[in-house]
Length: 76
Image 1 (spheres, one colour):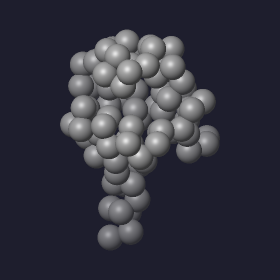
Image 2 (image 1 turned 30 degrees about the vertical axis):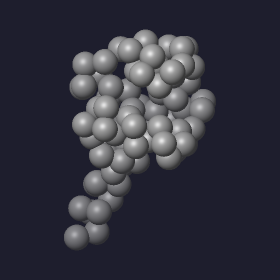
Image 3 (image 1 turned 120 degrees about the horizontal axis):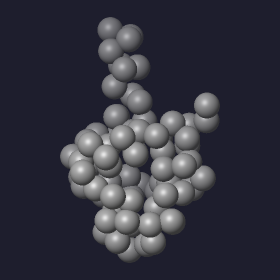
């Protein structure tokens, strides 16, 4: 699986865990629901500003979005 799709899946998980719809998140980002959905599908990659915004909105870490938490624990 490619990185963008994996990040998209984790982005969707973080969004649903936080109780937001795609439409609500799209509005907060100043875009349509369908444009935001492209991030979750891995079609469009996130830029730094959006990563930071979404981590704060969903109260999660970039480590979670990029699946880095487990990688660090596996090395220890």
